[in-house]
Image (cartoon, rainbow, N blue to C red; front, side):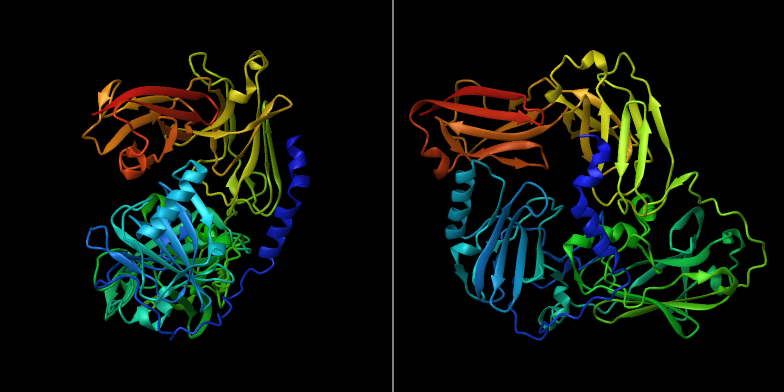
Length: 593
C-alpha cells in the first residue's frame, strides 16, 4: 500500500479528529454524582499524598491520588462500596497488579501497584495466567459477578508496575463514561486529606503567539516570582516592558509555573484551577474535575511541553491553544492584542481545598515597532494541515492534528556508514523533543542489495537526541518498510536475525534446587527486544514474572510450580522470542532431593 493511501484507510481517525476539535473551548459538563455519599476509606492509614489528581506527568495528567504507605508493602485495601470485581490487570509496567471494582452507585474504583490479592482472587488471577500462559493479563471479568462488600479486603498495597516507591494509586471513575473523577471532590476523602497550604507560584512566562494561539519560537520571556505582602509579584513589582515580543500578526499570552504541596508530605502536586484577570475582567479560566482518557495526552498542548521536559517547570498556559480539545476551560481566552496589552493583571491559583494564591503584575505600553514574525509556512509545518515529507528513500505522511505546535522543516538524509549495522541511510524528521499526539506513518525503502535478505526480519529504528536506538518495527510492502511512530528524530533500517539470549543467574545445568525458593535469569536481545517468554517445568507451564527494576525474570518455586517437580532430574525449558520472531529454546536439568 502506498503511503498516500493511508488517508483513505484512516477515515475514522479523521472523523474523530473533526469531532473532538469541534468542541475546543468547552467547560467540563457537571457530573450527576452525589459527592456527599458515604464511601468507605480504601486504606487504614493517616492519609499523606505523594501525588494528587491531574498533576502534571509526562504525556498525561495523573488520574488518581497516590497514597503513601510508609515505604512499606502489604497494607490491606478495602472496597469502598458494595459491588462486583470488573477487571484485573497484571503487568510489569504501568499500574502493575491492579484491580477494578464496579459499584452499585455508578462508580468504579481502581487499586493499582498492588503486591497481592486475597486467596480466592489470587487463585482466579493464577487461573487466568495459566489459561493464557502469560504473567501479563488484562481481563474483563464483570460477567463472573464476583461480589464484594463495602469494607471487604480486595488487595494488598505494593510497589508493582511503574511505581517508584510503595504506595496505593487510587482512582474513582464514573462507570458509564470511564472518566476518572477527582477523589477529593468526595467529601469523605477531602476531609481526611489535610491541606492548609496555598499553591506556590514560581514564575510567569510571557509568550508571543499567533492569532490562533501557536507559540512563536524563541519569542517568550520567563520571570521568576517574589513574595510581597502575602502575594506573588514579578520584576520586584515593577511594570515590565515586552518590546522584544512585539511581532507582526501576533498577540501576547501568559503561562504560569505553579505547583501545590499538601500538609503531610513534601511531594509536588498539581493545582485544581486558575483564573487570569485583566483589571477586573476574567479573560481565561481552567478547572479540572475529571479526565477523559481519550484526551489525556493533550496535556502536551495545555502545558509548555519544552519547559516541563527540559527545565521541570510546571507551566499551565493561560490562553486558548489550537490543538487541544480538553474540556477544562470554563472560559477559554487569554490571547491579548499587542496594542491593548498595557494594564494590570492578576492570576488566581487554587487547590481543591480552596487554598488560594495570587500573582499580580503590570505591563507597560509598548514603545517599539513591530518586527517580522518568524513563523511562516515556508520554514514550518503547521499541525492543522496534512503534511507529506519525502526524501530519497523515505516518506512520511502526517495527518492533521498529529502534533501541537508548528515544527521547523528540519529534514536530512545521511548516507549509511559502511561500518554501521544499519542497512539504509539515516533520515532526520524534525527534532526528537517534539511531542506527537498519535502515530504518524513513515516508510523507508529497502536498499536493493538487501532485498534478497529476509525482509520479515527488518525493521525501523529511531535514534534519539542522545543517539540511543529504539526499535519501532514495521512491515514490508512493495520494497518498503512501513511503521507507525510517535516520536520525531532520526530513522533508519536494521535487520535482526539473531535470537535472544538466556543467562541463568542462580542456577546452571544439573543444579540442585532443593533449597531454592526462586529460579532467576536474564533475557537479552541485540536489536528488536524481547517480545514474549515462557518457562516450563517437565513440560508444564510455570509462572515467570519480570522485575523491571533489576531486569530479572523470576520463577517462584511455590506450591503451584512445585507440583510439577519430581525427585531426581527435572527439565526446565525456557522459550523466548524477540520482536522479529527470532526464537531461543534452552533446557536445563535441575535436581530435587
